[in-house]
Length: 227
Ligand code: DC
Image 1 (tube, rainbow, N blue to C red):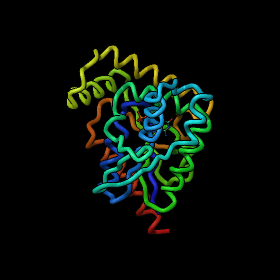
Image 2: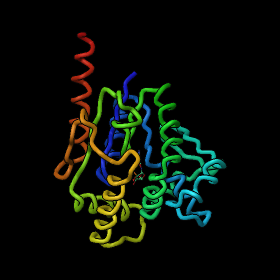
Image 3: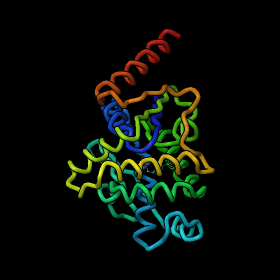
């Protein structure tokens, strides 16, 4: 079984790199952030505060979250509704970050993620993959970039999608807040696993990031062939 863990702060380019690596190596790609987004989306749609544990816990018991694959692409269903495209907004990212600080939410999603990894060769990206979800993954990466670069990338993404653009400064502030919240929460905060390879993508293209990851994996696979 091959498993590749990719962690890092918001908008660092984790998912583009993870998706490409998964395609090239024929592995299953799991975007774990989308699972937190799905729960955050449902809580907000029901008028709840996604960070309020006493509101969220009863909802959790009555929620069915299904990860499915269509033509190799991940789709997310919450209570039967395909919400894959609806959860990509910046607002939903904040709801996801808030709900992800609730221990019962993390327990439930981590269990689901581990189950998916059990039966498949996977590339997973998130915040706690190398530290909590797949601590024994042979390949771990921590992908980051300056907050300004990440804000610029997020802006390009939003413009491409035709979402009304915010200013780069506003996006940068949102990103800095999310970094702070994600790395200061009590349960499984965002942090680099000791054995993860650090990749600072500030001055790198996606292709370059993918090349670094593939090289490290290929090197590791060659070594394990010899052993
Ligand atoms: O990667 P993303 O922007 O889609 O993630 C949204 C939020 O979900 C992120 O701010 C924190 C949370 N998250 C988490 O706590 N653990 C993960 N493995 C993935 C995401």
